Image (cartoon, rainbow, N blue to C red; front, side, top):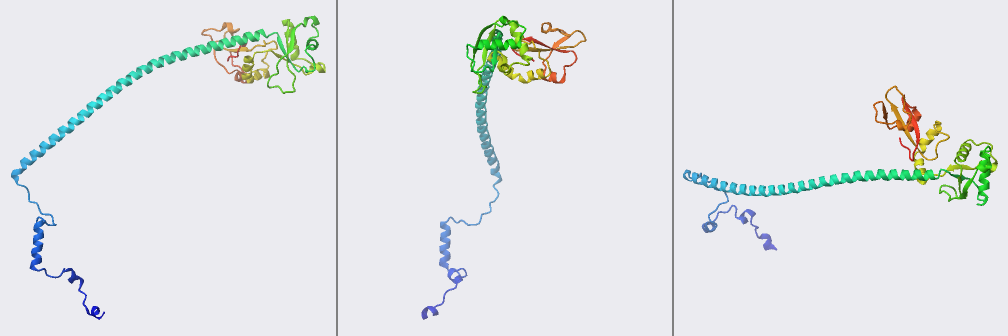
Length: 324
């Protein structure tokens, strides 16, 4: 411990030899290492300017290299552009072919659409005619609603004869001839406890019309007949179309434009407009492509609520549908 305390610790500068002079052998060793290292120095040497005699050769060489490189790049670009042009040309030909085919398909599609529309119109017209024929074949039928189920099938003709006699007492009883009278299936909208409707076929047309007219203005009927209702026997298609025009028919009824003797099947409404001060068309048979008479589409409900304009007339003709 005493020896360590008495030993002098050398200074850091002396240990590193930074401030100590190098001996001749050390300098010789350093020179040898520098020779082995190629005699290089850490500092960048200062280059002298090249010999003017070598400048033309260097410029020509660089120019030749640049020309060669530009030629190679130009050839590559031209080859790429040529290949791209071929691809674009092929794509254009294919696009033109597709456009031509699409044009053919478009024409075929338009023709098919026209044929489909024509077939739809024919089908609609045929359906309207069928429903009209069905309605006409049922014109003599009447649907009576409210006859209790307690009345048997055998008693229905006598019950209906008494009901019709109360409506039209001036017509003889032998004229109230029922070809048939029977119950039919109950409509879905009627409650379960409601009685089934009764369908009857009257033999005489004028008796049927008189019964309908009296049923609209019936008063002072016996209690067993007071709750009965009489409906026309129409096809399902006609009933559906009538439901679609319920708002219009209610407007007609509210404005008293309905006819008491109107046919049971649907009606077609025509609205005519006269451009001159002359006579008005008397009916749909006078409609034609004349200069003094035109036919226009008109909202019938709006026309009734706002009033028809000057020179307009509404006519009602039998048909299987309602047209505005």
